[in-house]
Length: 294
Image: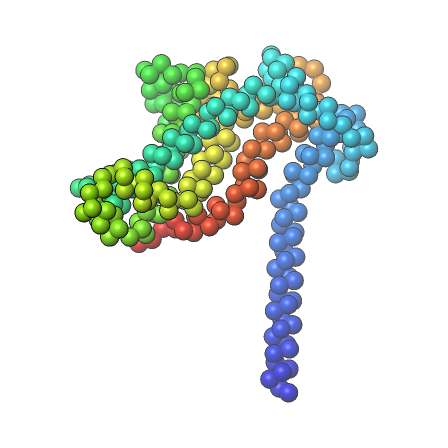
């Protein structure tokens, strides 16, 4: 009787603790999702309805006009082009920057763990140091470098900037992941006559799926959401989405169209939201697989 009573009390305590944990999680989820709800709801309202107050209320009249305007006709600075051309500018910048930084990071991690050379620890330390350099410090040297290469104000220049700044992070991810991979397999492949790239392509790369997902999500999010590099190094024809959104919100011509601003903000955030919704679970799994060891 006593043991059953104890088990009953412990079961009730566990149930109460779970309810408390879920309640806290729900409160935090509501807190973090509330801004998204406000933006989404007000982007579907006419401007007159927003001016009447009640930003948390559902629209009385549902309308997608603000989304069409934000995409194709909103005033971006002095150009009524909407966010569409700048969206494609960001795509043409993000995709090659993510691919190149992931490839370079994987090769660096491979060399630093399986083809170690004298001073490899110093090289890794310098690459790791680059992860902690503030953006503002590299602005002037990078501007000079882009000018020397003739890439100032171009999308290719922005790709180079994000490649240089991101390769330290990608190297860190892949180095930590490959450090747990059995070196004996690599040595056996060398004995069998496999070379540098064949070992990488046939042995390490097929097992790198989790850390590739981590790297792609990390780089995509950082590059897409970057504002400082885009505002500093982009010309009018290469302005990324975040800079265009800032120009949309701060445009001083005409009436402030808050519904268009909300729609534009969601359009700017939509790619990263899609990436996290589709592959967010793989991010945590891959990050744990590539956790720092030793």
